[in-house]
Image (cartoon, rainbow, N blue to C red; front, side):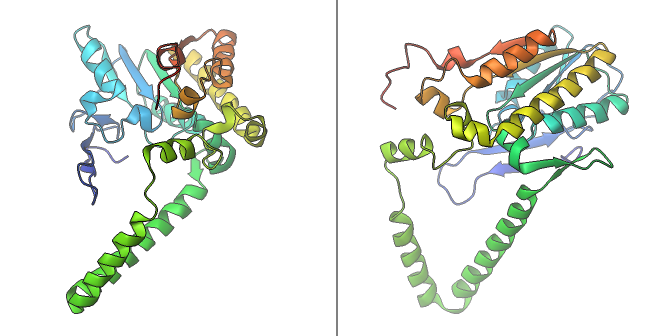
Length: 290
């Protein structure tokens, strides 16, 4: 993200859709506001992860790093949020390595590894061997296509609205009718989300998908190992945090392969490990009618 940036995130045409204020500091990290970060401050914790850590559609104070900031601030410990939507281990490693080389000092790194990181490493991201920077393969193409489609849609609607009032009204009527045909009930929505129709998070409960994404598992472990080695060279502690998605809660995937992978990694590499699966998957919510 750009340094000392401000914008609103969310909103759109959906009624009551959340809108969040997005500020970044001089490092390009999400923050309470635009501010200059002193690189030479050793007593500091950095959080990194994807959209969960970044805090999509939340003001900074409601994100996990924002809550940690308020807790540690009175103790003289600064907290920074280096998370960005769709990040994964190869980017965690390269980004942290880059900022260490730029002279950023900190004492502790907390990595929130997401279920989706495995798919990202398997099919989305690749590494440029010459520069070691991570480049987006599929997502940049999809994003560009999505932006072009949005611009075309806006131009068409704008043309009808300005030039043919009756046609535009008819267009809006037909559009709403078509949209209403695809509205899911609460039950249908849940059944679709937890089915193989959406497989991004299904690798922990489906062996075939797990085999398909095995490259993502191996790449994630590889880059987390490089990250740990880099941190060790600078006497920086590492904590790994895992948490479930809706699918893991629905299928009661308490002893998840996601937990096993990163718990084993943490034991092998003498890192702190925090497992949040039991917070969401327990006897109290096992039989909830969701």
